[in-house]
Length: 231
Image (cartoon, rainbow, N blue to C red; front, side, top):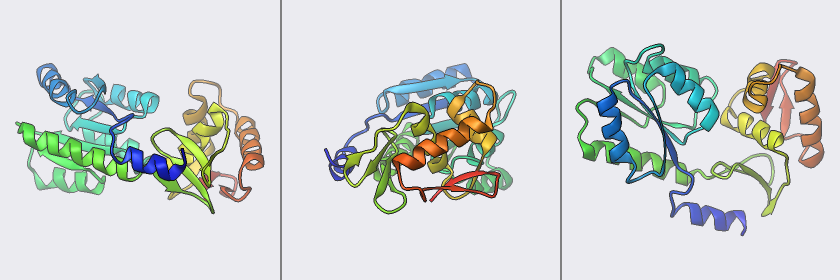
């Protein structure tokens, strides 16, 4: 299957779509799960912002549905942390507040929707569908020349040929693609790729050398000793 075939296929499917629900009201959270499981198979859930951020880093959900007011880290704080490194994940905010200040701040964080509680089921369904359509329209991201990144399967293609990469190499590319409009620091790359292992700049440098041998040497750009970005 070529990358063009994959594009057409994914545009007509919900394959690999997942959602993270962050809501401290247990009853409402259960209601949200019941509503959303008809549209999405993979659902993660938590009742506070810090756990939500940890789950986002671990599972990389396609969509995040978050309340604004939660213990440990509120919804806006959670989204600000995510948006520092990821502009692509679809985010829907839930709020009992209609204050302009909340709404304006949320808009700055590139949301799919800002839903006011109590949430009509139709509005929630429409917001989820909007997110899914947006994801399926951006399955393939063109990098330098004829390299394409498949955002759903997290694979790299050159023309229609799969580039064989290791797990760490794929995670490295994914990390840079998620923040492709800016440079990513060595520390942020290490945390994304190696998770709980001890920090090692040498490990990242070795990873980059291997990747440059397998791909175009100009695809990964060094940022003045601060980190890397994708071309």
